[in-house]
Image (tube, rainbow, N blue to C red):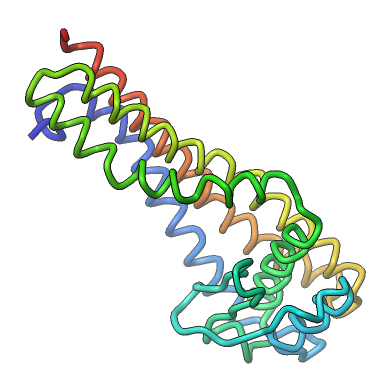
Length: 228
């Protein structure tokens, strides 16, 4: 009910619009550059294996995974998982995405502080994101301040995760561009295209952070409007 009746909901509207735009941008940019084949002809899987080996990460496997844009590096089992549209593809979009995920593998191997910090708070962040909103609104309905405060604290942990994710993702993209440049597989014009894909993907993380921050401000504003 509060989502539609209280004035604080308007805080979310700009962030929601931004999130929709970011999702549109990444989808349209990926679709555009997934149709442009790299002159090298190398597949995403081949590039992933080569870049990993160049960084002395021969212990990391390269595996296909289902879905669209579900590419990820899993630090738990040391695997680079590439989606159906990336694993066998030689498009500039696919190669850029692969290099980005290899960037995460390099971060993990080099004990890059932000990614280690993010990994360490995953459990409490998941806990906070699951319970924070129900706890807060239960406290709001009951006019019980401590329960609202607990919800805000828990949600702050989830917000912290989105904030820490930003330097992790931007750094992985910077590493990706450097690896693509040094590998020699892509000329400058293709790397520029791959960068557009990476920049569009990064926009979704910025949008997620903006949404989380606005939601936190909304909870704080609602808390301030209620007496203990």
